[in-house]
Image 1 (tube, rainbow, N blue to C red):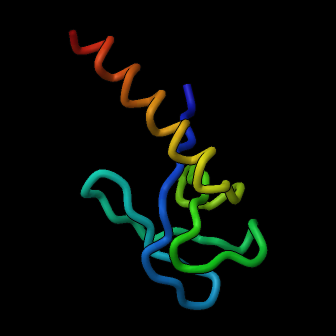
Image 2 (cartoon, rainbow, N blue to C red):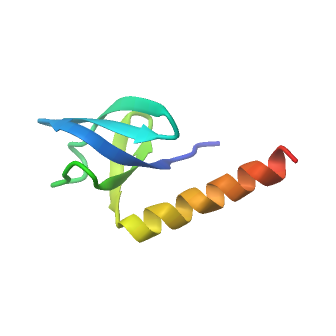
Amino acid sequence: MCLAVPMKIKKKKGNTATVFLGGIERNIDISLVGKVKVGDYVIVHAGFAIQKLGKNEAEATLKLLDEMKDEIYR
């Protein structure tokens, strides 16, 4: 099973970015998504940003993932 997760861009340099989610930072490749800037949300899979998301969509997805976690660990 594969899971791609929305993460927020914290830093950007060339085709790489540092993204953040829940205390976790990762360096990823952003060359597949075109223009993104610090503060944007991207879907991250296997070290690559594969899609840019709007803030509302990213936050709604993260909320659903959090609710799923709560159900699993109940």
